[in-house]
Image (cartoon, rainbow, N blue to C red; front, side):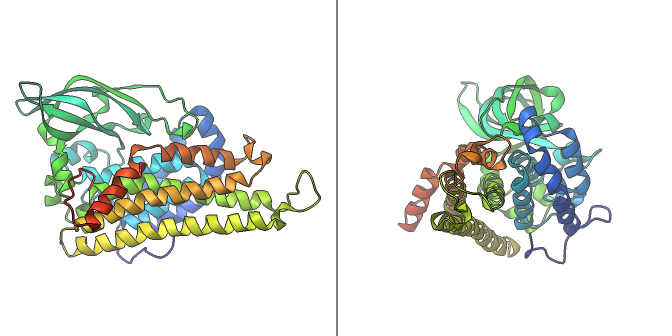
Length: 402
């Protein structure tokens, strides 16, 4: 987590971003110890969420106008990576819930006041797929739908969900993100999975509620890196592309899981002997080579993400539109980073033998969690790779995720 923390850290009371990092390091042993319980309960405990809240993690990307740090996104992802190295589910929920202040900063300031006006530690979950149906009405929309995979929703008081605005003929005319308070939706407990079991990624159900216009944001504005909230939140952070910020939110914890696997694997192999010979497995040259390959892939996956965010931040600081070529490269490298991290985990898992299958070892849990994260639609490599190829060949790019 060293390297990119700058002098302008921002404040939460008298706290600084560097203090958040220090407290995360202190929390990691507790997260490792509780990882099995998190999985068993299919939910992160309110106690852990409370600790992450108290140390200021969820305010890292929150606007200064509402008590946040407006931290460098590279620092945010480094914090996520560290959390996920101890517990994949905790890192995943922290990453997804912790990024929502970034998008809320783009909403009408009235929406930000609705969420943070009384409590600046209010949390928001999400389910962005356009599964909702919104009917325009005076001053807003009547809105209904059902959404899957809202990670950490049990700990949130609001949700961001996607929906299509329809006209009188029931034809879609806009795709918007809707901000809805907990009193207007219910959570259906349906999260029974083989990986990321502790994320509580349950369903959100909304039945014909009114959402005022100021609590919505057109996805067209999001793609343009613009929103009414930028009138008060002017930091370069809020001029980054949604496609880069949110896709990296999914990849960063997977790289953290690879870190956790690597650490658990090296500890596990030290002094271990083969079942069919007295040789120490740590002397196996094939295993040593696999270890080197995995270390390389984990490092390279992270370097790609940091490099691209450094380039995008240079444009954002200059208040220059980030070029499409960099956006498609960022998506290319994001899906590639996920693939490299999961590949590193697979390689280590393959060399763990039968002992790595035991439910009391973290290796198998990281392996399952990483593959569950890999299944997220944003990690599907095909479309980003095609878009990069089209861009390199000088062809037009028309894609909502760029």
